[in-house]
Length: 277
Image (tube, rainbow, N blue to C red; front, side, top):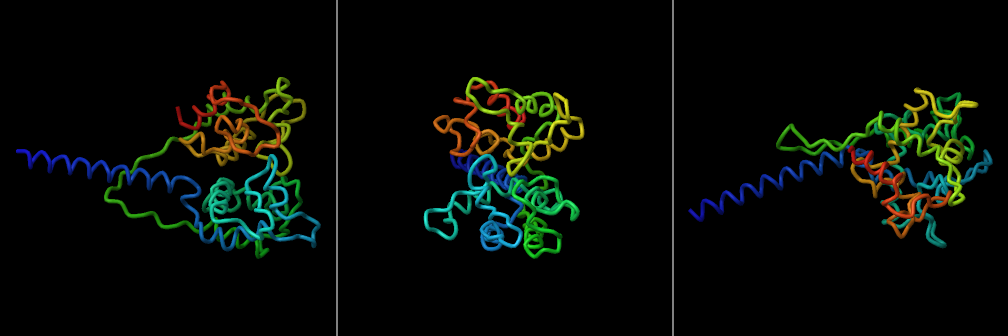
């Protein structure tokens, strides 16, 4: 009898372990980073961020995007020509949120520095690096974004789905946060910095309007979604950059810290949305 109970317990444990591993695998593949190749990023994509651009008078990507509101790269170590392994991993996690795997022309990493008449966006205060989609750098980025790793085999066709971001909640509760005035701490509204320039992820408000149009809200949702990891508020730069470092925030955000605690009502609203609740 004891042997039978022990055998049953082992089977239950093994089944539970399999389910957890399947769920973890599904979650990894559901995130942008889980669908992109890290080694290709490290060897072929990161060097693009360090390329000098004297021909068009633009700065290197790292000159603007390793500091301030548009930061998605780690600052280079003093005297170093490239990033450490740990820094490269963090760069990969952040840069992955700027692309839509399989969709180069929906990936702001590729569209913002691309000339508008070549299919690029009107954004990018740092100028246009690529005049055509045939540019070798753009083609390198396109190949990385277009190639998806093969999903690992599972013993079941059913996998656990991660939390989904809700558009209606975004429109009703999240977007208004980007328009809140912050006279108490002297910070600008999110929309004042992030609807223009290198750190842009919001549409400019229509002249005289107090809120975005439906089409603009949809585009805002698409971009802002790339700044979060569904189910993981403290891995989402939308929540960590403006959060005080002693409260678990990052060292980033040139626009100052909006929230001194994770108990702040705005932070809690964002966290609930990211968790899918």
